[in-house]
Amino acid sequence: MMNPNVSLTEQAKIVTVFGPAIPSTSTSDILSLKGYNKCTFIITSIKTTAVTGSAISLQQSTTVAGAGAKPLGMVQAYRALNAGPAGVTDALTAFAVASNTFTTDTTVSVTDLYVVEVSDTDLDLVNNYDCVALVMGTAVADTLSVIAILWPAKIGQKVPPSAIVD
Image (cartoon, rainbow, N blue to C red; front, side, top):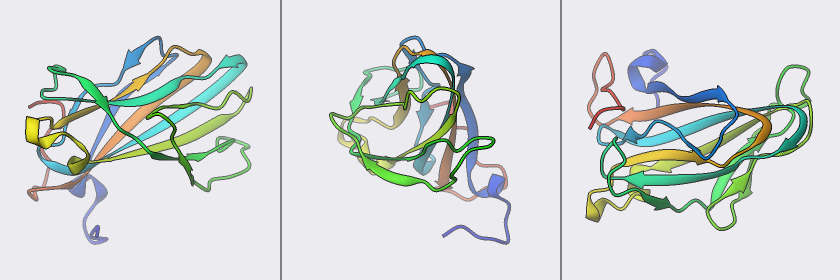
């Protein structure tokens, strides 16, 4: 449980890992979970004209440089469609992910929110995989921004440890 008497920035590491940009077979910054139990990717998707959504998946590796990169399974994610300015909802709903990938919605002129959670125990720890990244397929007119929140820190510190170094 998070402590309401301590700031979020003292309990979690917040990192901008991608964008805003239209992905073209893109990978977010690779993050180390050595100092954290979980990583929550928060994705905003802003569409303008005729849209091709971006396929979203996960990748694990043994270093933040991407050594030994391989797919990481994902069976569930969360979304709030049309959640941006003048949107109609802020409620995140869980949805099943097929074949470890989902595609962002293609409704024109709206902003959507997606959340993907990864636990350190989801990684192949037996083979020293302790890093994770979000992989985004090529999109058309779908601008993505991704922020990652790493939490809770395995060792409490006033300033949480870096997530972008091994």
